[in-house]
Image (cartoon, rainbow, N blue to C red; front, side, top):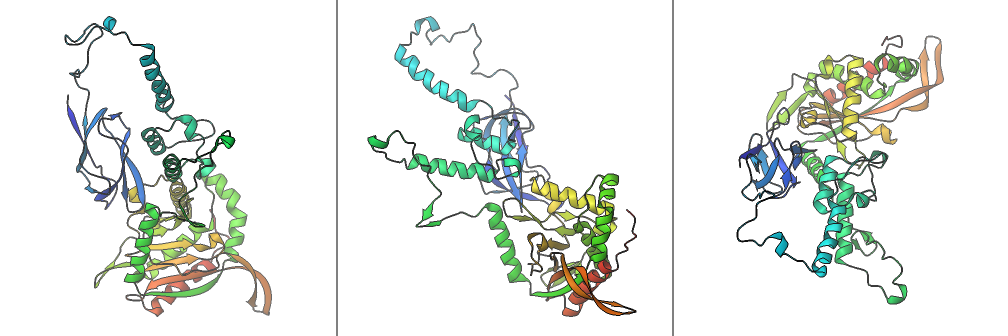
Length: 440
């Protein structure tokens, strides 16, 4: 039998280590090629590491929560090269063992064996997706490990898109399932025909106790660290985006027909921010101790809300080098993969400035927290139809305009009020000077 060492693969630019989040296989379990062995986490991204060979898991080098370096061995698989010493051919019988004809099991023994085998059959049947529900490899592995049958999994509530069962859903189900087993409901004979009620989540009086998710803990720590690190200052400005609104309404159908992409306001705003950063490069910096690092690449972080309420920030690399079509494709790709949990670790690395859209939830403005080690973040407020004073050569009059607020948070340790305000004014000027005759 040969032994194969599973090593932590390279997961993207600047990613040197990962944390063991959960083992998906136990010692002695069989492992197929490309079957996930362990779940790891790097910052905000969870991913599985598959096996490169088939065999039996014989050694785990690290426990859960341990940190593993890229290229380091984290598990050992015993492959099936050659015959196993324990394998016995059909016609061979060990000398010390009685022949099968000499073994006469009693009916009681047969009944005891058949019942657990029948129950095990329903549990060990492989979990598969069907026409109405899709199960990810991670959910399937958890179900297999915990002995959840296909029929039982089909009844688990799914909070994901189209009722998809997420990792959080199945772990919540298992928690409640364990509580139900540990604390059975006693019933009197008079009401024994009624089913026992489902045990609710742990409660304190009328209050429900909910444990923070791993991602929630990481975000909490990251935000608190930013507040304690940077001297946050905010500036606000109102922008008339009527020209952009009218242009998008006019070209969005043509844009989708020509490019296959839906154009939203986000890539338009991202393009404006990238241009403004080329004009004000001292906002495209980071701080390390008492040293300022001026970044050459303009990599825009795009804060994206997830279905479970958490937030992730995929990065548009070299945003200043993209035209509007390229920016739209990049924005749509990252947003779609973020919401379906398909981002790679490299997709969230290397950001130099961040944009967040608080307007998607109806907010007209916000005071966002800086994404460390960056020094600025821009919040996009909701676009509203409002009455406004319009200046013309013939005089002023009141008209209906599409307007929004931009909220700029910046680190006052290295960005003074003048620079913070000038950057915001530049973004406003770029947006308000939009060419309504711009071609796709």
